[in-house]
Every structure is written in structure tokens, then in C-alpha cells.
Picture 1 (spheres, rainbow over the protein chains, first blue to last red):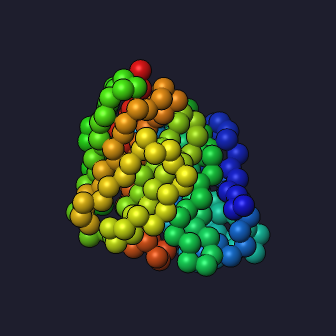
Picture 2 (picture 1 turned 90 degrees about the vertical axis):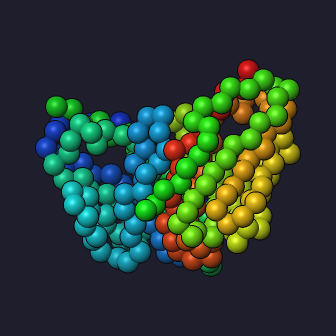
Length: 112
Length: 114
């Protein structure tokens, strides 16, 4: 059974701070990793994908992948109240599996 | 453009009704998906179409019937649903069903079964 674990939160950070969201996965052969943002009542929106060990930056977002430790994280710099949402981690496994396994999501609250 | 559209946005139906959800993408994606999402839960995969053929059915009850008329369209036909089927139904697409491409979600249909 492939598992993707996230702390459900809520993670509360002040405006302007760095929010750090973490995700661990069980399938050591996983190849592809995705972060989605989901506002309450809305659909998931893809914000980052990462495939190789290390950091990938896109604006205020940085995804970090460590395959040896089987974790992927998302850093949000200069957090804004509009970043308040649930962040879903999704992992695609090995063997050509193209169906992502989703974590339960971490609720982020950015307070002014 | 990474747009997936879904209609209707909201649907209320009785347990004896028949209705359909529609999904469309014009990105040339060859894999399309139906997910069901309950409040505070992750999306739950229902069906996958790859190159217009049903490739995955996650043991979904027969009251849900998917259809892929062409590479851009995906339908979900609903019949004799139960109140517990009330949820957000999400359509997604990806460039290919056999490689590591991102999935893009539509806005969803909020379904209420009365």
C-alpha cells in the first residue's frame, strides 16, 4: 500500500513569515512529486512539481525533495493571508504508475 | 492554457433521477480522470481514461457510468444515486497516461443527492 503522509494542521503562521509544509511517502521508487493548493470549496490547483533531488523555486514557492529520506516539502516565503488554504502533496510511484497518491493535506492559516 | 472545464457547477438530484456531469479540455491531453472528494478528504480516484479507453475503474458502483466520446470530452452518467454520493466531483487531465505528467483539475461539480 503506497502511503503519503502529511500533518493535517492547521499550521498557523503570521503574515510575512515562511510557511514550511512537509510530506513523507512510503514507496521508495516514487519518481514524481506535486504540490496542489486547494481553497475551501474549490478544486485543487497545481502549484509545483519536482522530479529530482534538491530545490526547485518558483516565485515565493520552493519545493524540496530528498528521495533518500523519502520526504518532499514546500516552503512559502513572505506568506500572505491569500495563501490560507489546504496544501495537498501528491506522489507518483514507480513502475510506470501514472496515478498519483494524495496525502490528506495540510491546512495553512496565514494571519495578518 | 491549462484549463479544464466542468458543467454544471452545482447539481441537486433525487435518488431516482438520471443526470450527467460533463468535462472538457482542449490541451491535447490524452488521459482524463474522474475523482470524488468529500469534505476534508483528499480526492479519491474513480475512473481513468487513457487514449479514450477506460483503463482504470476503482471498483466504483454501477450507478456511476463514465463515457469518453472523444479525446476532449469526458462524461459521468449518474443514476439512482444515494445521499452518501453527495460530494465534489472533479475531472482532471494530463498530457499522457503513461508518463510523469502533471494533472490539471477542473473546477468541479458540487453534487447533492436528496
